[in-house]
Amino acid sequence: MIKNLSHALSAPPTRDERTRQEFVASLRHHVLDDMAAAMRSRYDEQVRSAFVRKHGRQPLDGDEVHDAMLDEPYFGFYSSVRYNAQQMVFRSVIPTVDRNMEMLNARATELAQKPNGEKVTLTLDPELEIPRNVSNIEVHLQPGSYHTEYQADDVSAGAIYDNSINVFAFNQMGRDIDDIGHSFANYVRLAFPDFTPKTILDAGCTIGHNTVPWAMTFPEAEVTGIDVAPGLLRYGAARARSLGARVNFRQMNCTRLDYPDASFDVVFSSMLLHELPLRDIRAFFREAFRVLKPGGLFLNMELPPNDKLEPYDRFYLDWDCFYNKEPYYKPFRDQDYVQLCTTAGFDAARFIETVIPRYTYTPREEFAAEVARGAQFDDRTGRLSEEIRWYGFGAWK
Amino acid sequence: MSRIPMQHRGKRPRFFPVNGVDELMSMVLELTAELWIIKKRLYLLERVAGQQGIALTPGIENYDLSEQEVKELDALRRQMIATVLRSLENEFSELEEVRSETLATELASESRAA
Image (cartoon, rainbow over all chains, first blue to last red; front, side, top):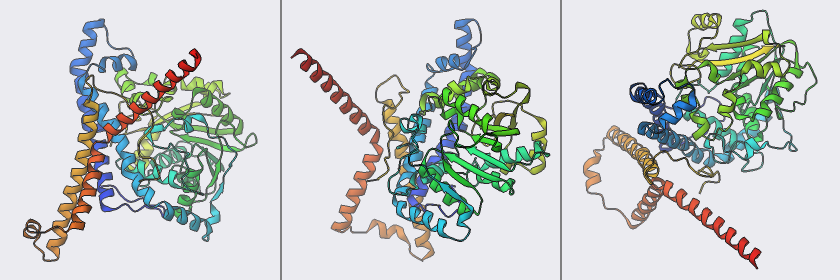
């Protein structure tokens, strides 16, 4: 069962559209849960032993597991179902968004004019060049990618994003796909009780679904979300207005931040780095170091680094890099995350990382105990399922 | 026709060594989605009708379709088939691209030779 998004920009599907969305969500659940478990069994029972017979040793990394799995027919079926399900995610929500385009655009304009509309600011930069990793690559197989506008003052790209993740996540990423934001804002609140950020930047915020939770967790803070895609930001501003949050949205590239040195207490990102070429990751890290105040926190929610995982789990997570138009995914995960931070100016001794359960799915005391326990990696880390645990890393300045 | 594109650009990955299996997988999955949508709609239909005291089954068996209804169903059926077979359409549009690229290369080499 897919729930309607709980804010005012929810696009009403027809009964058949909603049924199709539910089918696709179930198909994704099936491939990522049942078929993933069956594929793992094939690996354990057949593929690994065949590899050992041939090479006289266990596979050393994800590439070797991937090469061995290419000869396993079940991997073909798993990949085919997953690839098709990904396309069907978009095919199930685009007709709904397309039909509701005028209504959504009008509603976004109305929300800006309502009392309290000024609690959210939106500053677009029509001169900003859309980076080629967004304009030239249909990330996650999304037709039209994230930056395309279909009308004047269009929010369609945001609506596609919001509704497609709602299907994609089969109810595992929070009521309004905002669990990552809640989990990391509350991680900071619980892990560092003496740290009360006054200024927070969320880089690559898309529709601000993970930005709003920072404003809710730290109501005194000035929270800003930036992204390169105007349609996502327009939608994000309207979404935040309908939720009554206080957030600023600005169109800006995270590799060239238009802020003075020492502007923020927290620079946060979620699921951003693996979409960036390595030189942009390095530029963003340098900028994050520059705009952080001394004593400020740089924190990235991301996929876990390959060197912390077993070879099979590396292969499993890197699937997206090969088959889901995510060319920067594996190159990022192959990096030494400590070194990424120190190259940008952070001190290795001030590096932090964490693995936490989902805040909005976990009893409060259990979440606090897990935060205190520190980072422990296993096959649940960063892998979308009912057991998923989020990974985050960064450093104090 | 949707204003927002429904299909990603470029080549699709291949997961099977035998030609055609990738397309068949897409067809089976799309077909299953369509079938599920219909099954759920029928389920709801029977319940809504039953709530209103209407026994549907004999009515369905004996219903005479009008000319307009036949046309409507024809269009819906064609749309369903196009969706189920969409992977073939993509394949052929890729082939068209390859053909036009080949033609462009040929024309370029001809003009150089001239």
